[in-house]
Structures are given as C-alpha cells and as structure tokens.
Image (tube, rainbow, N blue to C red; front, top):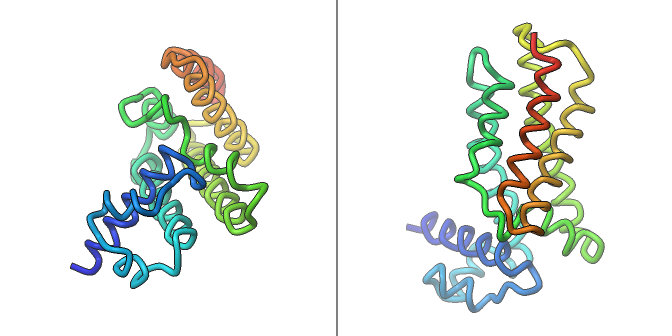
Length: 190
C-alpha cells in the first residue's frame, strides 16, 4: 500500500509538471490527482522539488527502458527497431512536446538541482541510443563509426523534430524529420 501511494504521487507529479511546467505545477493539484493528503507526501519526499526530481528521474528511466531497453534485448535489427520506435507516434504528445526539453528550458538556468538532474537524464537518453548503435556495429549490421557523436546527432534531430511538431501543431513535421533521419542512417546499414 505504501509503495502504491508513493507511485501515485510520482505519476501525478510527473503529469502535472509535464502539462504545466515545474513552476506552474500546483502541489494541491498533484495531491488531488494522486488522491493523497500532504502528510503522505512528506512521508516520502521532503518537498515539491524533491518529489519532482524523483518523479522526473523515475518516469524518464521507465520511458527509456520502454523505448530503448527492449531494443537492446533483441539479437539483431537494432537500427530498424530504433527507427520503427521513432515512427510510432502513439506514445508521443506533440501538444505538450518533449518532457525532457520542457524542463531543461524552464529550469536548468535557474536551479542547479534541476540542471544536474536534466544533464543526467540527457546523458542516459544519449547513452541508450549509443548502446543500440554499438550493438548494431557489434553484430555487423552497421558500419563502424563514432557512435557517441551519432547518438548526439540522433538525439538532437529527435528533439528538434518534436519541437517542430509542437510549434506547428502538425505531427507530419515530426514524421518528415524522422524520414530524413532514417535515410541518413540507412547509409550506415551493412
């Protein structure tokens, strides 16, 4: 029961921040959505900021596992699975944009704890992509290359594509960008 309460707080906090930003996230709304009292929050977290940082870390780790961890469990077809995952827009919210980029843009310059947390999240994001590329190179599906730089490039393209779709309100902007990324990556496929 205790872990269930903690998870409800994590989920509600993440959704509130994703929808309204950290500064716009109302603690009263988080508690209401989680269905718990403030005392329950203080049992698990020191304050809203602590709860928010934990929520961001845990929810992003779960998203990364869902999106990238499963690809790493494959025996082959790593880059194809990566691109197929990017083309699947059912798990994206182009109205709200990228949860990582949103927090970086809002909080990194004004709070060192958020800055450090988001740097770590971005490092994990790029490391997941790099690990997939490394596996593709290892099984000789992909030409040897600087996978660290390529992972940075892919993450930058992905973030830009999400922002373009958010700004235009047109999911096709995202898909068009991913199509060009796919064409580029095909040059490396053996």
